[in-house]
Image (cartoon, rainbow, N blue to C red; front, top):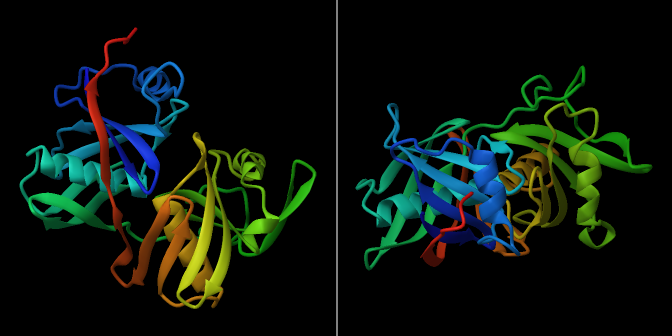
Length: 274
């Protein structure tokens, strides 16, 4: 099996083509490939498949074998891969995901994709869409998880996200595992610890559902900006500083737009498939 290892601000993925739908156990494949000691290593796998409703289809499987509807860093890597490997010729790509069709806008220099802007769609604070067990929007709600108290705001940003605002130095990103599996979230939630720097800049650390701490989370960065903006703490355009670099997020009437890099780490062939 040929593969390409890629990352978006350190959030790393293994990209494989499955245009003939031959992969049957996606979860087992992801667990094997993503193992950092016995496999290739990665936060997840991105499977390239044909689409009947868009230019191309992206299937995302987390490192623990669970399915993800959407991934902001992953879709930038995916867009770069399909264009540079001549699977899609357009510089504005419609990508089918579990969260609907996403539009990717490529910035190309010397026949290489440098940055990718993604229309991540709209967010929703409606509990039944997240999904979350709540009768009203979860905004600055105090919960107890693992005998610790957290003030959270939760929303759907393609996938479930929970945002916690404060000083980053006061947070332990590993506490995300306590909130991820809180009974309030029947399908789990991603957890973003955020610090507002000024009206146009925030810092974010993310615990990703099914993957743990990552160096970057695109949907999480979008979720953090949406929550901070809703609370009146930042403007509708902001730079998000993450452990692996930075992303630029803009909230518009058409959706939440994310711009950032995508990088090829290496390519190879994997032969240890069970």
